[in-house]
Every structure is written in C-alpha cells, then in structure tokens.
Image (cartoon, rainbow, N blue to C red):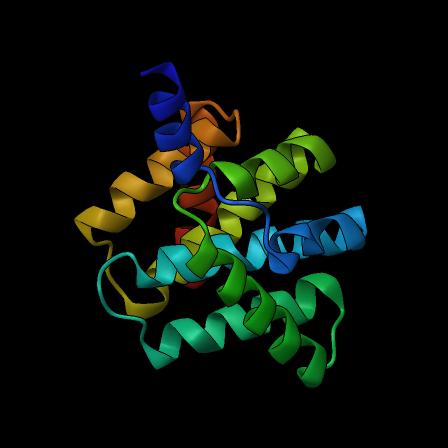
Amino acid sequence: MLAKLKELLNSFITPESPESTQDDSMSVEERSRVAVGALLIELAASDGEYEESEKNVINNLLKNEFDLSDAEVDELIKMAGKERDKSIDLWRFTKTLNQSYTKPERIHVLEMVWKVIYADGRLDGHEDFLVHQLATLLKLEHKDLIGAKIRVKNSTT
C-alpha cells in the first residue's frame, strides 16, 4: 500500500524539463528582466484583454528601463511570455525581484505596473486585485502601492 502511495505521489512530480533549467543559465540581471517582463504581461492580460496600447507601453518600458534595442525587447518579451505561460503564480517572479532588487527598485517595478494598467485608461477589478497581491509579494507596504499609483496618475495627467 505504501508503495502505491509513493508511486501515486511520484506521478505528480515531473522531472525538470530543459526549459525549467534555463533560469540557471541566465544571469541575475537577465532573470530579473524576464521577471519584470512576465509581471507586466500578466498585469496587462489580467482583465482578459491584452490590448495594443498595453503592448506598446510594455515595449517602451522595457526598452527604456533596460536600454534595449527593438530586437532585444522582442526577445525579452518572448522569453517573459514563455516563462509566464509555464508559471502557475507570480511568486516565482517576485522571488527573483525580492532577491535582486532593492526596495526602491521594487517600488519602481510597481510604478511600471501601474503604467501598464492605465495604458487602456481604466483600472479593472482584476487588475486592482492583482496589483495589490503583487505589492504584497514584493514585500511592499500599502503606502508604497498607493504612492506609486499616485505618481503614475500625476505623470499622465
């Protein structure tokens, strides 16, 4: 009976695929960039619509933030999209950022998220829930979340 239970449990654990070890071959900086990209894509798609305005904002944010060429941004977005598709939650991405970014850098990521959220001119309930969850996962306080939101809203008006 114990052997059957062990066999059943092992059937749920799949060996790592070559793609899942890709993280190990990337530098901390590359993993952080992919994490930021994945979070931005997740927020843009969280309301069920991944609009062109959101894609453009993400492209511009990544290009300017990381000083990338158009081709490098395309590659980063492709990698971030693949990692997002493989992930079941945001924890993996926020863990990467918590390990490699300072608090002010994590707040800056939150500002980038707010820019993506407001790219379509509105705050959807799913986006609002997710950005609050993201702030918690990034070990930020509510005042950091609201401060980032206000700074973004003030810069677009």
